[in-house]
Length: 357
Image 1: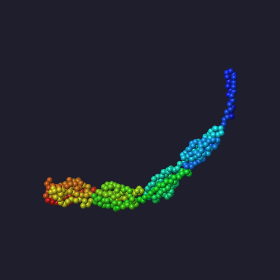
Image 2: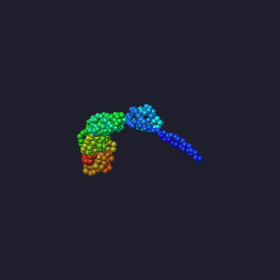
Image 3: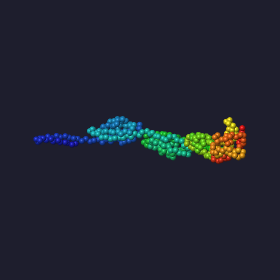
Image 4: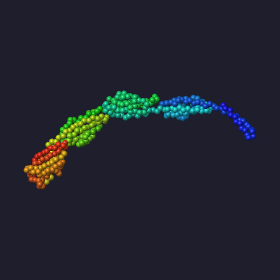
């Protein structure tokens, strides 16, 4: 308590005195509950001491706002401020932060497919700790990213915990296990050039999702199960097959080539009479890449016709029966013909041809 005296004087020397007493009242010391964590959906009783009357803010989620010990049920993290006053009306303040722990929302990696003997990484997030079951095939059951290597298709269950003993969450991920396929193209083959060979394969542990053939040279298709290959030279084909699980297998087939007499056909007679039927002597062939030369000789060995470096079955390179510009009468001639197979080897054919009238 303080006593205050005020003395007032005039210029004439007159004075007066006034007295006033000032009392200093004590301030309260308000102490509230320490800040805390609360599981969402639960309630907590807050307490404040050190004052005679109370005011809590905010009002939402409070059982009372002017009591010393309200019950709070916030849905989100909330700082509560309490004002306490003593009997003199003096105030003090304190704050309680209620951190609301929310339910978990875990995210887990999608289902996966692997081949037997392979592994895949599982991944989960959104919790503080985890427990995976079953343990079979896992390198750990308590981490967020275990490696899974199951022997059979397995559905894993993961439970997540928030670290406050408030909430758990559960998720599932399936690891499907596929067998490796086998593919067999059969034994290697030796074929005449020009042969059309269906490439057939025997599959086990299917079904097969993808087919890839290589090289694509002379194949009817490169991604179908049974392409047809036109055999022109020595070649080795490889097929790689893949199952829906991503399991792959490969096989090869090697093909050696040769030329044979039946691949070249030169008639032994023709009728160059202009009727449009059998008027030309044509070198017909399959599996032949080029006719190096085609020569016609008369009975005395004179060269009367020659063409070189042309494709087989080419009418423009055929002999029309003319000798020095005039169509020959009935006669027997000798031909010689050298061809190059599609595998690069060369062969020579000789024979007789008759002009018939």
